[in-house]
Image (cartoon, rainbow, N blue to C red; front, side, top):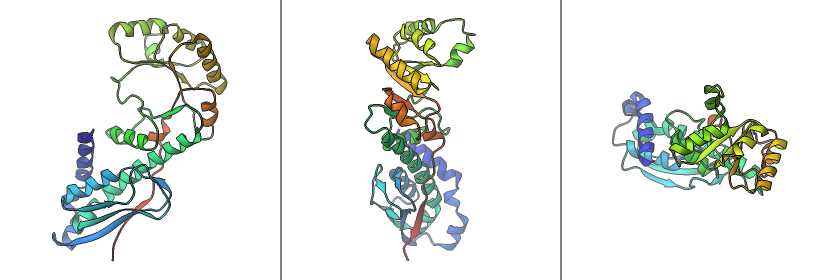
Amino acid sequence: MENDIKRIIIRALKEDLSHRDITTNILFDKAKRSEAYIMTREEAMICGSEIVKNVFRMLDPSMKVSCLHKDGDLVRKNTVIMRFKGRTRALLSGERTALNFLSYLSGISTLTNQYVKAIKGYPAHILDTRKTTPGLRTLEKMAVRVGGGKNHRFNLNDMVMIKDNHRIAQARQSSIQDAIKKVRQRTSKPLCVEVDNLEEYKQALQADPCIILLDNMSTSQMKKAVEIRACLKKKFLLEASGGITLKNIRQVAKTGIDRISIGAITHSPPTIDFTMEFEQ
């Protein structure tokens, strides 16, 4: 994971040609040093402080960084979260890259935390999905954890997940039970089956998967699925996904579901407004 993050930061700095910042390199000598700080302009849950630190230290290994708040801290508007002492060129050339990471990741952690708080009192967990930005999944899933959520599978090899398109691609020639049986013969990895209605749910039950994902079901259907599981006394997890928002998530959690996966926390997070200011 550390190597992944390092590669992402290096790629971001290369994208911005930080080492060839024509404006900064003309105006400031290599030896000039400055002090600066980063402040949030709105309430947010911080995520990405270590990323910011690494951005500036890649440009100036002698950069002194003071983190006044750690990842996972909920801070108020106009809170100073980090201070820096180092080469002026490094501070100016790395400013936008650092703020981009901080704004984006803090947006994910802040939104995730809002979902976590929305179901407080219920045992369900908030999970992310694979609806992530290509190349940034490691960071985005880290931000979800900072916000109090949990990670779903990281890649296609982490878990067997039989979705509707897998069955459609087979022209539905085999039943859910047949698909599960075929998987069981080849791997012992965790198995999740996506179902669209209660009839498919009952079919999946007969094959004992680890997780059954209720896709775009109504809360009444979810509640019925939970009741059926209780009557059968089977041990598997029930996950809800699709069409879940901050407005209706508490009703979803109330059904007794175990997991709620939400693509929006990584594919549509708000960005948090941060600014970096130089000391006079």
